[in-house]
Length: 523
Image (cartoon, rainbow, N blue to C red; front, side, top):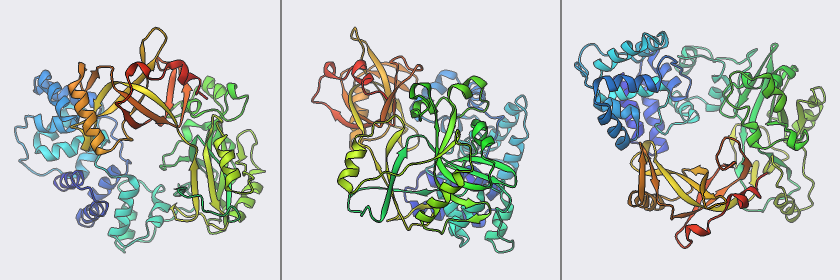
């Protein structure tokens, strides 16, 4: 655990991307098997230790430390793992035989819920504060050290002189602790293969369009739909549905998986049909009724039937089409889609526009519930992983804005744990009541964050653990992609991607927007 704890500690205090890559690479080259494989699983979100829950950790510390002291300390520190690691009264405190990361993972993975408290406590007793922090982060699956799964894989590839796309190609066909992957990286094993395994391939991504200087003769335009990007894979009689992050979401959309029975790999947007849309694509709010469900009821399947609007084709059967030009792949996609169930799959339509002025007018008028903007794809572009300059661009529609009143603020996490950086804001309901309509934790500069933090501390009227209620006097201009009716919120509305656009110290709270005004913007 010592080396893994040092790695996490170093990553927390390292801001440079290249420095993070070097730290992870050095660990992967020197740590023994299978420790480094489990570390990679933790860094990429591939480690699941179901017996350890946050409530269990809180119960353990409150048996050993005054619960009031723990609550106050947790509020000040802003992170449960760090608070427990510092407060834990360890009798051995780092003494005795060192614990290996692999032994910790294997022990925790085999625990029952009833055995977990004693086993976790025994480990915490043997470790020092840094190691306890690493153990608790590992056990709960919430590292929060500024590392994405892609960055961890890039570090692995650079550490062993491999192509990161080749690593991504086989990653989802392997299981922790990834012994074949490390054997390949060190040169004493063959490259793993994804043959006859329904693995995930990295998506091709787009750059934001910053200047309208492209020629529509070179680029095709199509709608950017507001669902979730998915990859459909059918190999050797097995179908998998993957999210953009490579998560297997097949169980959440069984009707889509069951309908995709033609060998191949497709790229598309997962949407749902809603009654309000007359069978057309519903809003993202409607799609949320399906996301994250392990078991989907018959009622949900009937009320929110899912389908995929297809963008691209990567494989036709066993034939890899990714090096073909987009225009050739588009023709292959249309032929492939003709063999699929039309209730579950259709091809995203192209937008006909003679020039950019016409395309901008079409884009500006698009307020369909499921349209997020326009995609521009170079007609001769191959399908390559990641963002490549000059190939694909996304031209999102302009955001909506509203003036809302700051109501509550909560401490952030990680680097922001000392600031109140998560803001809940509201709009006026009939009768003068202020109702929450959204929550945002980005969109402001570091200087604005410091200003907002000072405002929260100086204008607090009530406290609820890490949350402060503030005087209802500050207006924030909030930008958001769309707003939808929602039964889960008291206001009846939910914003899509809200962010703080600017601080309106020039505007009195009484002149902020109303619930009825926001409802007129709802799609």
